[in-house]
Image (spheres, helix red, strand yellow):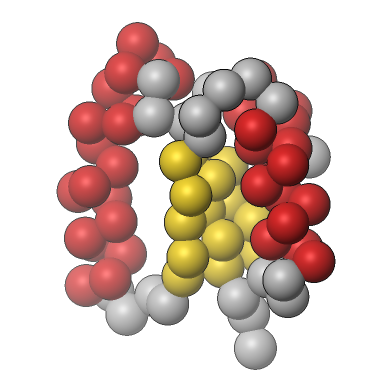
Length: 74
């Protein structure tokens, strides 16, 4: 079974990602996707969240942000 974990950088795209996340999250729930998520708080936090998510059994990580967020998640 796939366990999804979304790592969201709310300040990416000049803060637009944070503003859009609520709508995105609602749509994912409407589509029936079961997932957990966390918002990044500072540079480097996405990498920490990735490691923690993998240790906690999540097997699908989704980066929601820019190229810096994606780089940290990978």
